[in-house]
Length: 220
View 1 (cartoon, helix red, strand yellow):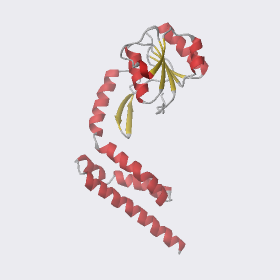
View 2: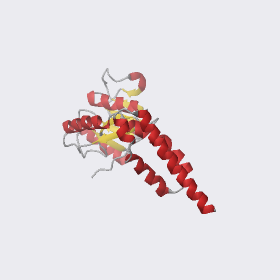
View 3: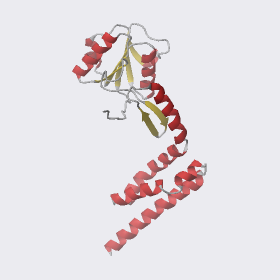
């Protein structure tokens, strides 16, 4: 069993041990998320942006883990024995660690992601088939399109407004479900953004007016 989470890595120190192709991909992903990346490897790929990382040009030594005190560790060398040592050291140190040597080695696996801001969708096959993961990613990306990310943006903008205007949790919960069952999403899917937004705003105004009416009736 796995428990999926989404980590905020902005300004977090992440350690990658290794400098090959797999390490390069992990380093790029970490930098994209705003992490502070330290790389331990005698040699590193020219594709790794040296100006954006801290490079320790050495083989792995347990002492480095204590010196760096990382938030996450990635064992990405081409030596299984070294990767196992990194995993053991990280776990003894109380740090989450990922190993390139396969599923169930280490504490977590990377998942394939679909990034359509503000939506992030993760896909994992539990190590069974990366090819299937790629296929599912492409299939789901087509289904998501542009409608869902735009709707998510609008709902995110309305969320604090609704919380301020409507005190009752059940009423707010019912509103979100009513939006998803309304014409807003179908209109977005056919490119009618203005009509969809107007429909959403009308629903929002209605739930706020109803809440105000109930509050006034209760006070009278």
